[in-house]
Length: 364
Image (cartoon, rainbow, N blue to C red; front, side, top):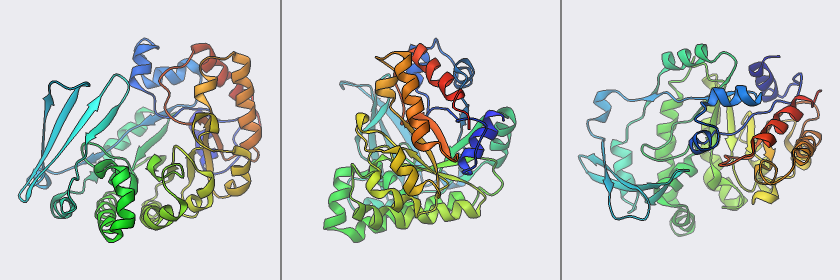
């Protein structure tokens, strides 16, 4: 099998020729700080991993942006490099501040500050369309890679799931509190985000993505309860999954954090795959063997590998044993893609080579 065939077979819960092995999004700081400026493609080729090509295609028409104008400026005197963004609309402005370092970006000031700010979103926030011709070009230029995108996120800073997007725009602590204090407002907020994402999905028919990411870590059981998941996450993201399937697209649902109390809840939404199955040693709770028993007949399992303990600070033999442990726990019958359970910012080259090499020896 080619890498692409191997990954797609696993997503379809079929048995590939060997264990597919890849990684979650590659960090710019790692590629440039430790790998001499390698591209994603060069990284996968160098280590012999099954490649993923991450790409997006959301675009607006000029007319859509007349009432939604985004500008930004650098802020001085901050602990970290900071940029303020302003969205000007006929009914007022929304602002937020992002900060960053060499590794990542985070929100220092949220876009939604008052409850009536969501009225501006409802009235003026445009819905982008999928540029299918662009994705066709990406597909043709990366024939051996899995073409992976995501459901459209909020402008400036956001993530694919409705709940996760709302958390990025309002703040997860405040959002959780409002589910108790003003649940109707939270539902109104989520419906606004749902509409925009549905509008985008409805333009995706024919786009040759292999899989699209949905969800986010703020929907994990280490952040919210199963009850909140069922009330404020599943009713919205399940609609997106159904719409994506109608558009001919596959979905991987991402929850980096606790998953075990909500495994069936996530699977019931109908995704094609689930990730990241973060182990306890990294702050999650994933038991791959138990997860395989409970949901392995419904979804492809992606992740499960502890990159914190087995891509740094151990021997290659330790890394190989961890690969085997994951394969023995979740590999039976296919439907499993070995991957670090989220981003990594550092990794020993020898251990990445052991990771890839041992996965190649895990034959069905």
